[in-house]
Length: 515
Ligand code: FAD
Image (cartoon, rainbow, N blue to C red; front, side):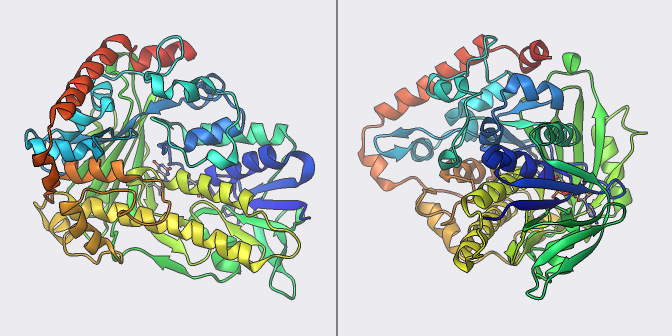
């Protein structure tokens, strides 16, 4: 069996991988992390996707242990502001839709033909986000009976088999604090930590990596090398020569500028979601953490300059943001053609990245790690295992790319060149046809992107009806059916929202008692 795993890179990807491999295999393999002190981590990446709870659960970490250490907050979904027109907002929550008489409630909502707040009418989370509530009661139980079973088993370990299951919420956390927390977790469980620069990568006659040469610690040998060096792709691209496939033609945002804004949460409140506010050349994220806000402008450099983007972001962040240090980032959007070649596996930004509009960077990392464990190689280096891994990882990234392209294509906003051009860009294969289908048959598990990429049909409903750029029609059958059950369901949703808002504590109140 392969015994020695060497991870190059100590950002979120490197330490999530090290911690997970220790949890999965214990002492049966050795894990070494080499991280440079000179080359900084990307310093962003603080909002997550709802399957992330499996990660903490797999590590056996209850919320009250890790959340306060990482200034973490709950995220029930994403609030999209100004994507339809200025002043409009809607939520894309982590909440599956109900069905009535065999049809998704969306179809009944379309059939009624009233109102423009789909999210308000069908998701409980919209009201909970507006009212800044915690998804948990003060005794720690989850807000809805149907989720209770999972919520209470927080400290129990998820199994690898169930890791695709979604939860009704995710987390937001300080990326630097999380990397520090996971460093402690992994090193306490035996991972070796070398702080040094990799200056050369050594390969054997087959082209396999045999060692990485460091400036001060000599050669670090291994059987399997995990490239977590970020956009550099030091091992996968620079050493193994794997080409990088850009998505720039479909997703033109290639830059970002970020700020860390300290705030008094008690006074300001703590909305349990990430906000994506559309701008003239991209969008601004707002990620409320416990004690500060992470905010950043993701933009296309063809449409604005770094100086203009920084000015816009500082104005958006408001008083107090004038003197904060800005972190300018050039983004490499796309994916390495293969994430695994020979004995080198890329995880994190070196593998692939799409703009963080749906917070999928850490989702890709988690998926890469889980799949690595499922596909863990032995000394035969079975090419079928590698091919299967590469297909699974590529499908997830390509699926998310399609979902993001849809955001721009279907946003009603078209008030300048940036937003008008978004309607003309190339589409991924199959999306044009799917968009036509969805106009008369709302998205289902069968007619969305055919491979696992995290997003289920309900996400497509939330986005298509929130963005407002295309019209969906209800099935004709509903006009021939008695809609009384649907009316009862809509009434129940209204009643439950109101009740939850009145019973749940504010997110600030809940998290403050954890600290
Ligand atoms: P990095 O953080 O870049 O770490 C690279 C590591 O490699 C560092 O430790 C560095 O020291 C090391 N290294 C490099 N070269 C060498 C060398 N020669 N020798 C030794 N060590 C070396 N994801 C989300 O899920 N949610 C978000 O909200 C989100 N927002 C984002 C916003 C932006 C603008 C960007 C660009 C990304 C965002 N992401 C988000 C993605 C997320 O930030 C990354 O997926 C995550 O931080 C992982 O990064 P990484 O560990 O792959 O790379």
